[in-house]
Amino acid sequence: MLFLLLGIFFSIKAQDPMQLIDHVQQGNLSHVKNLVNSSNVNTLNAQQENLLLIATRNNNLPMAKLLIEKGANPAYICATHPIFSDDALFKLNHPGIHEIVITDSIAFSPPDQRYRVLSIAPLLGKAIQIIYEGGSISSLFRTSM
Image (cartoon, rainbow, N blue to C red):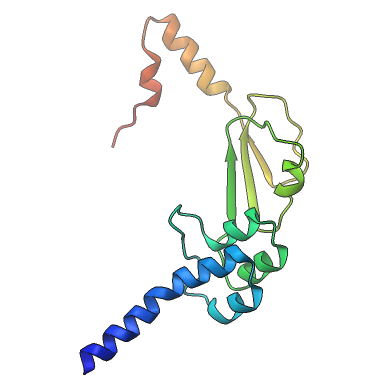
């Protein structure tokens, strides 16, 4: 009997993350308020997206604020080249996004302090040096463990 009760308890607990993810995706704020807590606020879906990223992607500001209040890890966005669609900058202006990291491969004037621009100059300089010396630029992509 004890094993049956433990099995039921763990099967119910195992469903909570999926229920929570589903309610965030569907925008059910009242259900999320009842399910979310500090231990599950950073639950990941199958694509390894946390709840805050899902709410941010769906542009659900009240959901994002609730998740932030409950301790959700902030979302970080990365783009190799800052080529954004028409409404991308508007969508990126969301409290769930903590930082947007881009390179300076294309001229871009960041609209606010959340944008961090990384220079590709050192990488290009090293590539030019390696090619000039007759080496292979594949060495730039090797890492030592």
